[in-house]
Each structure stands twice: as C-alpha cells, then as structure tokens.
Image (cartoon, rainbow, N blue to C red; front, side, top):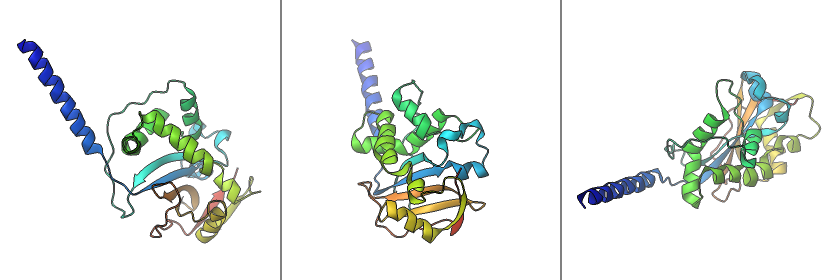
Length: 224
C-alpha cells in the first residue's frame, strides 16, 4: 500500500511540474514575423553546397514564422528538447522542399528543431494544436504557398535570367503591387539581397505598425 501511495505521489508531482513547466512556456505576443530566404542571394554570400539545387532558383524558401512583439522586446524561447525526425510522410517531403537548410554543416532536422523549439511551440500552445506537424503544415500551406513562394517573380515579372539593382522604395512598390500594405525588412550582405522579414498582425494580415525599417537601402537582386 505504501509503495502504491509513493508511486501516486511521484506521478502527481511529475504531472504538476510538467503542467507548471508548460505554463512557463506560455508566451504572450501581438504579431508575427514571416521570414523568407532568397536562395539566389543567400548562396552568393554563403557556401550552400549541393542543397541549393535548381528547385530553389527564383523562389523563396522558409526561414520561419515567429511570434513577435511590436514593442521590439525579444521573446523568450518557447520550449526546449523537442526532437524532430523525418518519417518520410508527405509533410516532411514538403518541409524538405520548402523549408530546407542551406548550411553545409547543418541538417534539416536540426534546423526544424531550432525553429519549432524557439518559435513554433508558442503557436501550438496558442491554438491548441497537436504538435509540430500542425505548425509546419500551417506555415507551409496556409501562409507560405498562398502568399510568398513566388512573390519575387510576381513582383518582378520577366526578370528570370538577370541581376538588377533595387532600392528599398522600389522594392516596397513592387511587393505592394502583389501584397497591398505589406511591411517588411529587406536584408542584405555585401549588397546581395538574401532575406525578407514580413511583419504580420495576429490575423496574419500585413502589420499596420510603421516602425519597422529596412536593413539595406538598396541591393542586388539576383535571378538565375
């Protein structure tokens, strides 16, 4: 009887600590950042190896969808320790295609684990999703494929085999022709444009907050 009571107390304590731990990970946020990479530019300034094959030319890939604060305050990491293993499902096929890592020293699984543990788990808690599968599926199918995958080619039609110099104001005009009222940061290195942060409200519409600015006033937009 004492042994059963001890087991019950241990299980209860574990459940309480788990609940308490989850409660700590509950993060309040008021906006999102949708970060997408332009591999043509990214691989100009990084050694992408064989991962950046023709599949990614002239399309965005996903860096992540991040819960954020308009105040600019940095959010804590959502959780720790979730392990992600590719099970060969259709979802993981989509993740490998639309959400790859270009780092030669990294793996897709480690990249996905980082994005989920740091950002995705907050959304799972917010929306009551079952787990990381719901997060990745939502970001790919409801956000990325509907709006961002071909955004640059839609904004700059007929530029599939050239390099153009684009000022930030010109980029705003071109992208807002496709996504009205879009607000974003254009990120460059060595004058190559390689990433964009799109700022979104909690309903995933373009943010009305005007404090966000670009990190480069102009840059080289490479098409392959």
